[in-house]
Amino acid sequence: MRFFDVRQGKATPEELTGSTFTISNLGMTEVIYFTPIINPPEVAILGVGKIRDTNGRKLLPLSLTLDHRVIDGYVGAQFLGRLKELIEKPQGVLPGLPSPPEVSYTLSAVSLSDTRIEATIRNFRVMVDETEDAGGTNTAPNPIEYLLLALAGCMNVTIRKIAREIGVKIDSMQLTVTGSLNPARFEGLTKTGRAGLTHVSIELSISTTAPRDAINDIIKEAEERCPVHDTLTQGTQIV
Image 1 (cartoon, rainbow, N blue to C red):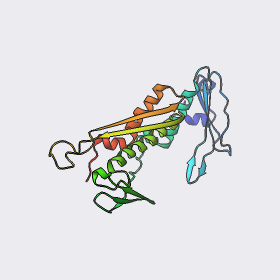
Image 2: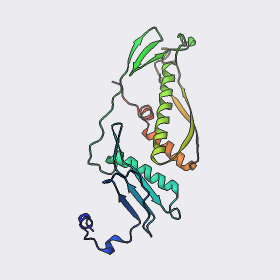
Image 3: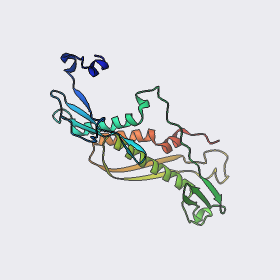
Image 4: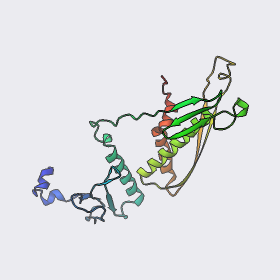
């Protein structure tokens, strides 16, 4: 069956039966959200409302009705999450589309002492210092602690983003990030071995009603999509 046959009313009854899913589009009207009714014996129907402009962003309202005798609500939420992801990033199904442009991040810093710097990041001022044992004044976290914080913050954002995409509600989450290094190379006591972290671990405690397998899949995907995690594991070159 060709698309223009349907638009012109030339589709035969045989061509319009036997389906399992329908899309009902009211985008040409003023309707935003509505409750589409399933066409038996189909198992689901997707309602598409009018696109809205909100704070400079275009929002497409979607309403899904499904038959719970066939499809669990969690699966329906996953479907909507995946559909949202594909609409926002159509390159996943339309590889010919151009990729989004790279985003650059920049900060500037002023050295205040042997251990302290003050950095300007957007409209924020951030201090970096060392502990007294390391010769500092202990007025702010040290660089390694900020690195671990960046990983924790990025994983939090990424995990929650993926959870929203597939319709999983996270009630609360606690992250503990630990890193270990041997200071001998930094102190100039040896010319072998690494100066940086040799081990980093992340402990996650997530409160949710979603199945454990679903949470494990989210964490695994987050490890691949988190920019800071990727930077640390893939060894991005500094030039």
